[in-house]
Image 1 (cartoon, rainbow, N blue to C red):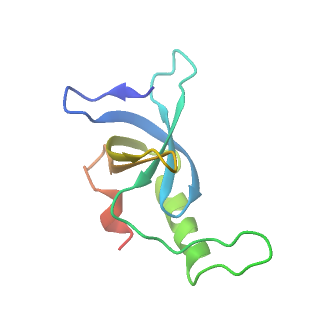
Image 2 (cartoon, helix red, strand yellow; image 1 turned 30 degrees about the horizontal axis):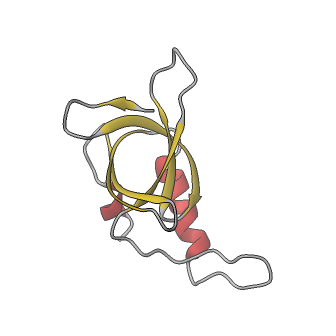
Image 3 (spheres, rainbow, N blue to C red; image 1 turned 90 degrees about the vertical axis):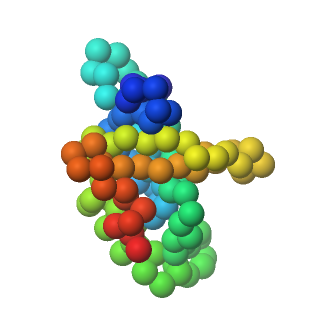
Length: 109
């Protein structure tokens, strides 16, 4: 798992992939070992959805994901899991840049 940032429930890692416009794949920041990945869906955000095959994207879905990719990939972040929805197997959380504590959620509004 990613390294802990104190005892506050926050963890540190680097954004590896942005699979959709509301989720990030974060890997641990420790380069001494191969870190496991953690997928975090941003809490309290409903983003436009990219289409599956034979359907149409919601308006601005592609642009939203590309914005998040350019903003986050390769960046050092802190994150915490706010809640989990077991029925869909997703963890929802808060993600902030370690450089200035900017919450990514606010940049997407």
